Length: 221
Image 1: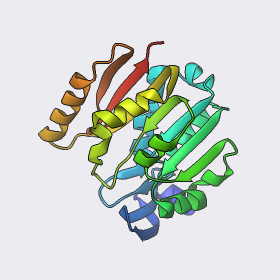
Image 2 (image 1 turned 90 degrees about the vertical axis):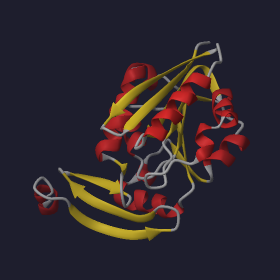
Image 3 (image 1 turned 60 degrees about the horizontal axis):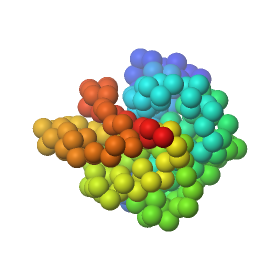
């Protein structure tokens, strides 16, 4: 409790480790809450939770609460999952996919992710998972980073076409991106411009928490 109170004055680091995929991983008390950070960016809770919460609010919490199956690609500490369960009261099945088993261990120990009854965690590469899964989803959250780097496959047409194929009717995609350079902005602009499927609506919510842009995709029928 003392560390939580002191964190309103100064961040208090309580755990630090090395991850093969994410390099430095830290758990810190900051402004009264536990957050998970990589070397250069917030991985879960803190600003990231605010970013993804804003995206979910765009769809409407009541709409999401009625959904049956959500897929989260990139779990880290599980902040978007906690938003789904604790704030939206999502009762459907949640499948979380993360390639980094070390981060999931931290998420279970410090953020109690393993206590969420309707959550199934899969340790797998997101690209491989979406190729293999036979399920369909009402909500797909894409939140994949290695520190401040986003894998190139996320912006390839084949991947996003597969993601859209996995959506149920009226399903939605929430894609969190980071824009640190002019090249990143150009990448996102081209991604949206080149997405021309008449069965979907695509738009962006730019400059959330300074460097993040959310891309929203909705299946129309």
